[in-house]
Figure 1 (cartoon, rainbow, N blue to C red):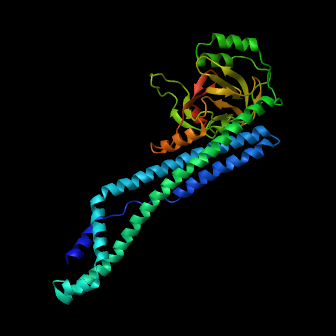
Figure 2: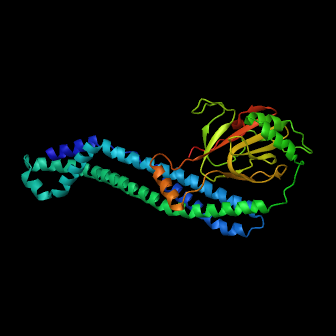
Length: 382
């Protein structure tokens, strides 16, 4: 009966860990497929009648796919750590369980019949216990095997992601280069007012803060005015201009203790920045220490300030549609292999390369700043 009691003790001590959430592998595969699809779209974009729109969609598809893949890989890394932690916590109980299973596997019916100290009656009782315990042991063994197979699958997903990231990165780099050329070639954008280079130059030279420049720009007259769409009605639903994660909200202090009325988004280098709403470009170019600044007028009395871009598109006075590229973030893409290696290594630390560039977003109503997140749907936390 000792063997039966040992088996029952092992079962009492062992509890299977939580199973992986459904769809983890499917979400990773779907993200990889979206990256491959974005890569395939590049050839079609090159021959599209509206190359700017097609290339913009290609870059966005790549960035969406990369963000989805980063999220899926983060979940695989967390799940792998969870399973390993369960194994470590259950080390003693797993040992007893495996010992009991090994004992059962090595025992034959003959010795049990001849060696049981209580004779045939004890043998019958032991056999009844074993007949009940063995299926439970088998179930626990299957659960253990499933966890080990899941770890192998998670590792395989992470390793296979490298090739997908490499191909997608090459596609995105080519699409960004083509987009920059297409934006330079575009000359058919409507204009709402005539630029006064001298007035803007003086304003840039006299501005000592971004707020001062924005207030001065708001007082400048326009010939026609901003687009007349219902900007107020879009409050809370505008897409973020860039794919990234919120680093600081309005009014939150940075490391130096400085607070600003806008929000800060972390992005990957060379991330695409687009117009969230039809708007008139009121200013684009370098300003103070913000690198390139893009200021657009989405509605009369409102100015949207985007600061920290590496490249800006368009000219002052251009009217752009929602989704039109306004520029690219700064920084330089690392070599594809280097990027993929850093991207995959980062998943072990909680989700891949979260971002190396920052975009400052400020929304002003008249001369006063308002919280941008009242208008924007916040980006997901990848």
